[in-house]
Image (tube, rainbow, N blue to C red; front, top):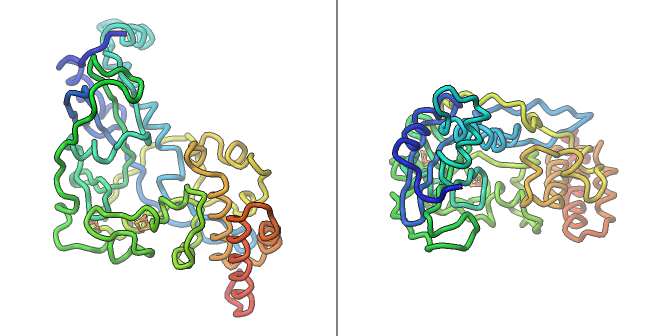
Length: 342
Ligand code: SF4
Ligand code: SF4
C-alpha cells in the first residue's frame, strides 16, 4: 500500500461520489498529519413509543435506534473503493487496485476515539452550536460523523507515531446560534455551562455509558431513558426540519427496549445477546451502566411489574447496581402509594 497524500484527483472523486452513497458532500482538512475527509449521515428525529404498562420499555435516543455508525462505515468503505475504480473495472477489481495503487494508505473512522466533532468543524463541514454539537448548514445536527484519514508518510496508521497533531484554530462554538439559549435552558441536568462547555459528569448522554454512581439530582431528571439523551437537540430551532434518516437495516432496536429483557439478561451476556451488532455493543459502553440505566428507567416508569426484578438487584453483589436498585425500588413504591405508576 502506498503512503502519502491522496492526489487532487482522488479528493475530487471522493467529493463527487459521496452523495451517491447518501453521504453529505465531504470537506477536507490538510496538515502535517496528512489529510482528513469528513462527511455526515443523517439519522433523523423520532418520537417515543407509547408506554405499555405490561411491558415497559427504556427509551433509546434516535441515533441509537439503528446502527447508523456501522452504516456510515460501510458507506465510507464503498466510497473509498469506488473512488479507486478505473474504466471498465468491476468493483472487486477496483477495490483490489485501490488497495495497492490508487488510494494511499487510509483509515475509515466513525464514532472513533478521533476528535470527530473538532475535525468536522475544522474541515468546514459544520459549525458547533452552544450545545457543542456540529450543525451542518441548513440541515441541523442530527447526523453521525465520520471520515477517511490519509496519514502523512511520516505518520503510520498506528496511533502515537509521526508528528503531533497541531491544534487548528476553530470558530467559537455558538456563533451560529445568535441570541438563542434554548438548549442551555432545556438541559435537565444543567450540563451546558456556556457556549460549547458541556460537563460530561452531568450529561445524561455521557453518563449513560459509564459505570459510575449518578448523583441524586441527575437521576431525578433521568426519565425513562435506557440510552442516549438529545433534549438539547430536540429543542433547537436549527433542528426544526430534520433530514430524513438514512436507510439502514443494521442493528435495529427501535424506539425502546423492554426493561425486563435488560434486567433479566445473564450477567456478562447482555451486550452479546440482546445488543449484538447494535450501537449498544460498542466497547466503551459498560454493561453495568446499561443495567443501571434500566433501573432508573423502571423507576421513572413507576413500573410495579418490574418491582420483583428491581428487588433482586437491590440484593445483588455490585454496589453501584445495588444502590441504584434500592433507589429505584423506593421510587416505584412511592409511585404505587400515590397511585401514579403503571
Ligand atoms: S445530552 Fe441531555 S444531559 Fe447532555 S447536555 Fe444535552 S440535554 Fe443536557
Ligand atoms: S438550541 Fe439555540 S443555542 Fe442551542 S445549539 Fe440550537 S440554536 Fe444554538
